[in-house]
Image (cartoon, rainbow, N blue to C red; front, side, top):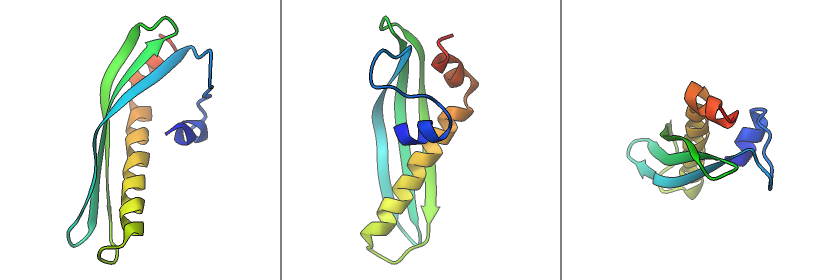
Amino acid sequence: MRQLFDRAGLRTVDADAAVTIKGQVRQFFARETSTYNSQVEVQLIVVDRYGTAIWKGIASGEAKRFGRSYKIENYYEVLSDAVVNTVSSMLRSAEFRSALSGR
């Protein structure tokens, strides 16, 4: 997720952050039917430098891919796509973006 934030133009740091994003993975799975289907759901909290929660929410993403049956690469790809879609949904949220700015 950090790499995706960096690619989106958000500055991430290892220490002395204005805000910190904490999360708990609630769903992370892929299912193979006639296609590969995945679902990712993360419960998030954005806290300021004093530890006060300034935003709470859930971000999720789904993905679907065609692939050969029982191929681990297809599972990796569809889960990776769902993570990208989860981060995209986070960044589309005006409230989340506002929390990142410390407001």
